[in-house]
Length: 301
Image 1 (cartoon, rainbow, N blue to C red):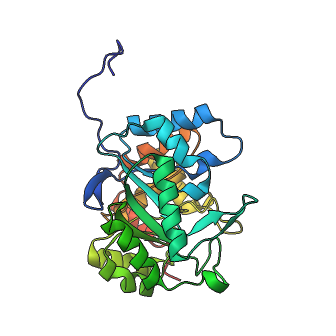
Image 2 (image 1 turned 60 degrees about the horizontal axis):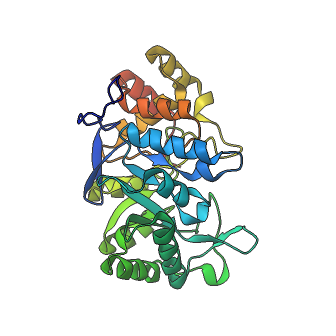
């Protein structure tokens, strides 16, 4: 918009540059919508955050029907959706009658969740559907009849992809072996817990490098993981940030972008100031010494 409020045709630069997701170019700085469904976030504020992100060039939004109200908020804020927007959702869990989050790993349950996401987002196809495996923490652990064969799950999602309801299949919270097992199904992205202080998923990332699969780390700042050191409290990260006039969170995000060219970030927030800081991290450039210092902070567990 111009100062006079008139629309211009000038494209908004993609924050963080671009990388491929399911064959489409998206901004490497995306947005995770989970926090918008948390208690205390006003609906109008959530809508404004989504519009702020889209206006800043974000065209990759991550959500899930089981998060709560996020899909409806995305629909109300952004529909009719821009043609370059890639909506990504997640399946593998659901809410029971009491509103509690429970495993939902059975193939038929995955199909039902895809249909729920289509309905609440108001689309005929979801760009990417990530299968959240529940074999290891963080989060829920599958037990009993919820311990389902990965091959059976992928067969169901592949059928939904063939039917046009899913654009591409992703994985979340998987091991190196599971990713290799899933490769014949065609995997567009992997979401695992990973960051500058936690490289335990490095073997999974290496498979992504081998096969040019998008890497979407979650909890990169470890702020949602109780009892673990937080990135914002690490002295090395803080020193690098001070030298660049940036925040520790921005440095941690910039390190992830520098670590692998096909990394896509989905930091979430309900605060407009934090959103602006996160997006600005896409323009932060770390020098070789800074990267080397950050690289030394953690090794694969």
